[in-house]
Length: 308
Image (cartoon, rainbow, N blue to C red; front, side):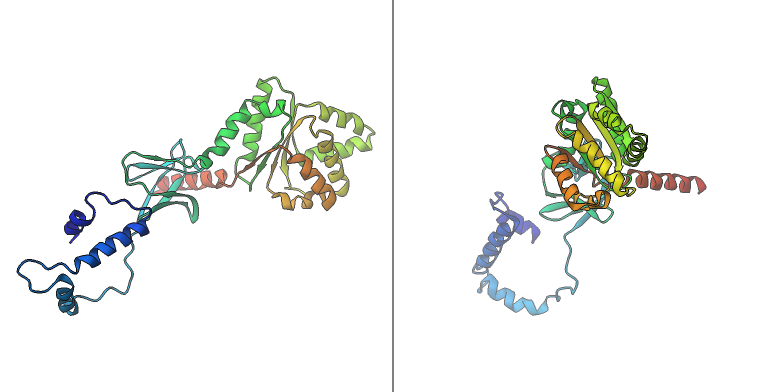
């Protein structure tokens, strides 16, 4: 039956706009074949089928699944090899183990229970199926390494939960800024706030504000991890306001923008700051899995193999 269908319905390869359209075309051909009368038979195919139908086994209660499951590892190009073809995922998942579900018309890629990519399935050989959006953060990061954002006085904000590599990326970009002869300062938000409060108490606040305003790049790490006092949030606001369109600010935070009121308290002040900070900013969502968690799982696996 498979051979018959292939010869009669799939040669030459039929043209169809979608899988549903192809199924509809083949169904119409199958139904029309019911009027065909085979040699040495006095009745057509439809009549013979009705006679034989009562002898056929009933359909199984469980619906047949046409899914294929596979697994693999994301390579350095953020690609997963499936049935001799390559499918892209977000660049942040390079090196991850993934599970792949192949449908008749699409490919779904998962890490754990999280779907990280969806592609139209290719039945070719050695094809590269790319989603340009998967490489936006990678291309942007390479542009940031050049330091053009500092020259343009644009800000950079890394958003994401703990363990996503935000601090590591900020430190790396700070190092590259030094190589490009830009003056920069790295500080945790909590450390900066304490420094500002001490300077106010010692009547040196204005000098400190002027010093922070002169840096080409100010990197503020861990915004939102520790809440500030009203005085601290107002002083931090002052530092950031002084730098608006005068120098670049890079911020790492575990909070979405809607939650920044937890840091600054006053909704009006927060809205004003966000309007300035996010204006022409590069915003990078670090929504991949935790690197520290991944490393801990790998080390646990190595210890387990040694024990056995």
